[in-house]
Length: 118
Length: 436
Ligand code: SF4
Ligand code: SF4
Image (cartoon, rainbow over all chains, first blue to last red; front, side, top):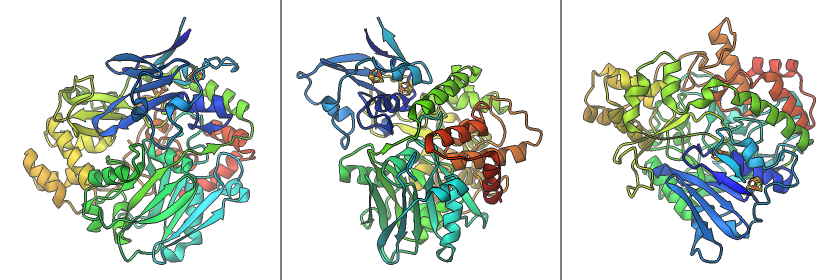
């Protein structure tokens, strides 16, 4: 099972990042989220979603999803957020196993860009 | 105020070059709720200094749908009234996560400065190097300076520095809701802008109950037919501009949303790049993000193609000029060719005509979009809806789209999250006070 992201559907709203941060920190925060819409290429209107899994960093780009084995990728953090905890130091997705709603990012995404893949 | 808040008010004295912090008392929140409600109170408290006040909504940056907005409150040089201007995109929430709920700015600096707010620390920083630069160059310089492309900014361009009534405070690179000439106020005080970044944590008093109710609300929101649509085209169509979607389509790249706003109210137009490009373009500055519906339609009315309208919007964004003011000035001067209009952008001085009471920004269309709110008096309904959005921190365009975001739900979630006992009478009193 894993999280699947349709980056072309995504509207870059950050709700998934909030929901995942809530799952980690029991408050409203983005600090520890393992799903992060990347939005640093603002003037180019180029955005998608990053997901940290146990062994890989998933980069859901508009043109297709790229899965980078952790350790092999040179610089995945340039996608993310320089002042936050680097993506690779965050806890990996646990599919929100302790949450009554299940995967919080799936539940919150307003445009259904995220789903669970069996 | 322990919950949904940083418990911090910042008072900046540009003349003295110092900053002070105050607590945000729970009594003040119980009486004035948040956003424009508290801003207006703080304006009154420091009225002798005619301050500019920036505040977050009580629900801003929470799991309440569309809780994206903050609000700038100041005496508008255009309307002469205390006005409340939304701060949108992802700038509105960054203010809260950077560690402050309210920022009162008084005085005039004797040299160009900007406010740099990061993780609960506030600095008045030198802006001599960016004075004279446009909005894009300034945001780029500040982002580069701290090495963080997610820095969120509120910036004036040359129009604000010159102290023109048509000057906007822009968000990051883009024009926004400022029809009030707040950009002029920044310029007059030698304030080039503000930059925000932070990784805060906001606690809710009853987080699980908050999330239960917010998710229930979200499900109801997602049932709306408009959720199958995206961007400005369908909004224009819903406002009766039925050919606008087709007109706009040749330049549309992608649509994006303000923080947790279920409908994407921003459309990115590509100018120097094929809009069908899916991979990352090699062009550094291919186009412009458009959120200003009346301005876009005003350029359309001048007979421009969507491509030329996008060029005009991009020029306004760089210069920090209200695009509706530029479109109005172009119309008055009989300019219809794009080169003339681009020259007109830099030469615009007058603000656009103000619709409504001059307290809330008519950047947000002044009637229901998609949704049926059952309002008999549309003008009064719109003013109230904008007031509510400005108090709780709701994205203003989505607020006139989505009837499920009721005042009751905002009060209820505020009470659950903030351990408060707000009631409709409190809200009525605050609206009565700020709505003018
Ligand atoms: S399933 Fe849970 S842990 Fe995994 S990315 Fe989504 S919110 Fe985060
Ligand atoms: S919640 Fe959905 S639309 Fe919003 S950023 Fe995440 S994937 Fe994109």
